[in-house]
Image (tube, rainbow, N blue to C red; front, side, top):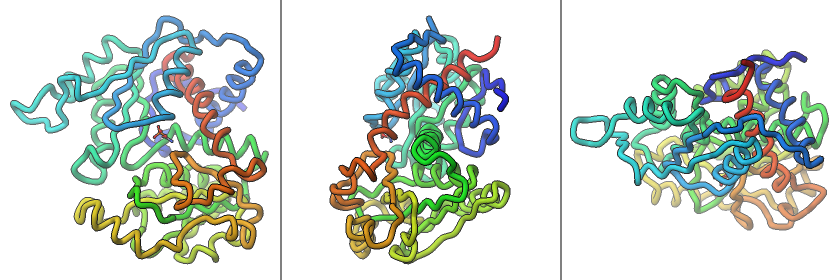
Length: 341
Ligand code: CP
């Protein structure tokens, strides 16, 4: 397998890079993880700074990126936009423009990370648009740390973790299922995992009550990727049917296509009509084979999935998956901010 030169490349969506380019990241991730466990230093980004704009909250993403930059010998700077001058409104008098913010940040940092989720935007797609505008103006790589549509750092971690645990993933069945939670969650993680699993030739089943259709453009992309990779992609509206024979299950709540129209209260009422949609231990034992638990976390234990499944060391990938964010992101940062000179 060859390495690709990814220096200065931004990563906003799972569809921005080719499979071969992602393979380079996964290969370097394996090496980064090996060096971590053998106590070897990895100062590939000494004196470099990764600027992280968190419009939305985070546990794993912030900590894993900060730890990643420490382990690479550089620095990650946490930025809360509320303490900055930037405005997303982009009209005279509102605040500093996206363009000026991006151009100035690129003078200080060697890379920029952005997290912009659904509660901070006015319509679906706006988070992605803003990230792409920042990427257009910044003369350094921009990494999506989760938007309203995509979460490439998480989905790359998911495919790395599945390869690590299962070996070959091609032809293995992954079920990405809507499940009940009062949290009214975003779509980026499920859409990202659907895209990357399709790219890597898995048999992907997306299951949800009819009201919870995902982004039609993402679904088309999944179909196309599955067609090219030799995998398959299907959507079903019955949970037990979906779980039959599943190797891996990603049970996650997400909002309906009417979230921005009807607001979160109506979304919660709609979700309450489908409280039987849960990945329980009983379903795992009766239907899946064996139904390893993949979850980006935070997980709503007792709603999305039973705690017994989360805590089963034979079944649950969740803590190794969370740790792998660190190693994947070290590889991603080293290739985009360091790279070939
Ligand atoms: N999986 C993930 O992105 O977690 P955080 O929201 O805690 O960063």
